[in-house]
Image 1 (cartoon, rainbow, N blue to C red):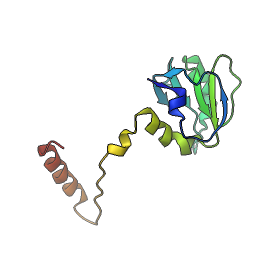
Image 2: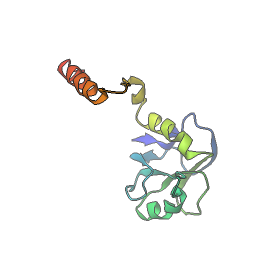
Image 3: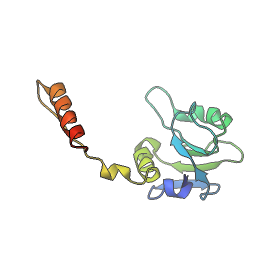
Image 4: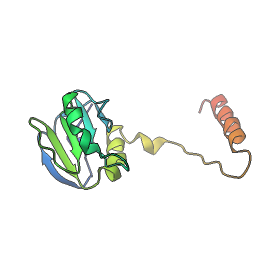
Length: 130
């Protein structure tokens, strides 16, 4: 679990309402999956705006919201930033203890043989316990 203040550390926050020391079990941008002690991040999508689902997240017990537009709800913690889509990866990095810094990424490009090369490479790494 992380404190709200830890999740938003380093972000250009525009407004804060509520206790930034509150603990959050997980962060989520799907209102159907949030529950108590989760933080819901409302993201403007290409077809839907996550802000439309804040009420559903609230009904599911969520009380921490990271938004672009401040909702009118009682007894909640609100963090408003300019662009939730832009800052989501940074919040995830903060929440998951910078685990992304330890990831190894390999790119396989070309016209033919990418899938075969990926399977062979995976097999080699698996045998090497990597």
